[in-house]
Length: 183
Image (cartoon, rainbow, N blue to C red; front, top):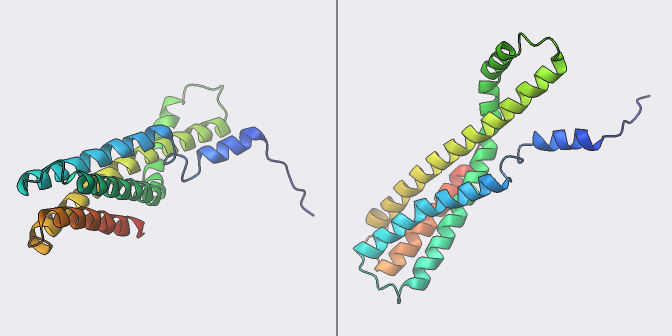
């Protein structure tokens, strides 16, 4: 018969730090995602504003709704793609990071094998979170911009400026969110 062991607070914190959503839900990552989504959506809104010669007072609500929808869909896409890519990157980088840390700690005889393994796991987790977030931002911004411009000039080019703006940005956000959820 197997005895059930109690999980200590320390073990619980360690498990939580290695969970797949730990890096995604941090405040700094969420702030980064918000800033990068805003930087991807606002130039496209400015493009619609300039090309369609929209009046800022008449089109303010439309531009605001488009901005909020685009930013929200990009943040959702960043989180989904980061969560999907992190395990793949961990597997790819684990060996190289383990070699690097073992090389650094080769002279230190006081560190146990378990502590070395913990350091390797922590470093791999940290590196994979950063790299997957950077990849998610790059990929989703490029896809969002390309799809939005394609929708605006080729698919919905004949619509009025306000409708074109909303449909193109919301549609591009939806396409990016759809692609980010696929594995």
